[in-house]
Amino acid sequence: MKIALASDHAGFDLKEKIKKVLTDHEIIDFGPSNSNSMDYPDTGFNAAKAVSNGECERGILICGSGIGMSIVANKVPGIRAALCQTKQFAQLSRQHNNSNILVLSGRFISEYLADDIINVWFNTEFEGDRHQRRLAKISNYEKEKK
Image: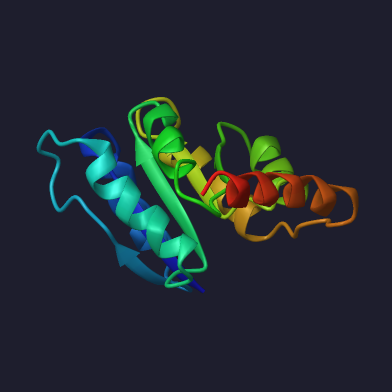
């Protein structure tokens, strides 16, 4: 699976650790290349657009709290980014919302918890059915607002 990966300076260290764990996937790293202060929209938009346009199948975004990257990613049509602080949130974000971008906090979760969350997120399937109906309503709203 091709994965878009991006962070800001506060998520840089976790991003680099995640790259070493996701060896079964092709990673496209949208930056940054160091931990110097930078603005999360600069990397987040590019990674989210790569998922939206099909260049990547899914994405993982990381900033200090995860909130900024969540806001950025969810501005891109077709993106269903979920900020997940627990394995249960990751599971539900896939089962019920078919999330295509996982957002993590670089400051508030450990790399071990991040690994567990990522593992659950990648290994949980979308349930469809009534959840698909709900996602269709979101997609229709996005199309109406163009």
